[in-house]
Image 1 (cartoon, one colour):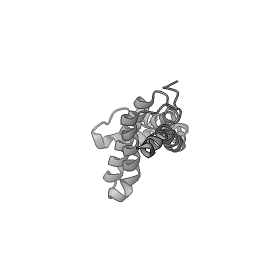
Image 2 (cartoon, rainbow, N blue to C red; image 1 turned 135 degrees about the vertical axis):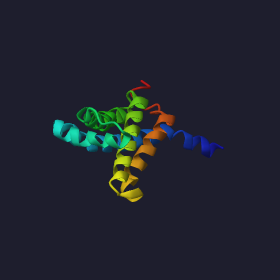
Image 3 (cartoon, helix red, strand yellow; image 1 turned 90 degrees about the horizontal axis):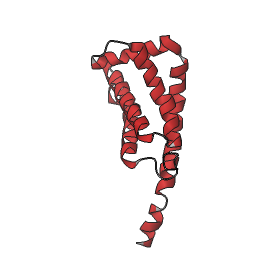
Amino acid sequence: MAYLAKISNYKDLGLLIARVGLGGMMIFHGLPKLMGGPTKWEAIGGSMQNLGITFMPTFWGFMAGFAEGFGGLFILLGLIFRPAALLIVFTMIVAAIQLFSTGQGLFGASHPIETGFAFFIFLFTGPGKLSVDKK
């Protein structure tokens, strides 16, 4: 039992490491989308057609970049953590659907599916004690 108590002491450190790694990668993916401007946003937002949403593709593309870029920063910091994780989960669902619709199959869509699951788990775990939300 003492061993299990020691392991549980590292839970918050593990969440911090996961937040920094996954949040950093989301920033890495999101900033180029944000800096791409309206032309890039419109192209990315066109993916919403797969969900039957054909209006405002520029807005949806910007929101995908925002969810990944700023959402990744919020995840990294543990700030407004669960809303940021939820936005990223939704973005990963749309990305996976887009990849399926282009015929890339499960292998092509595996990255957003795996990433989406990681952020879905964050909805349940929360950011841990080593976060801005907990300070």
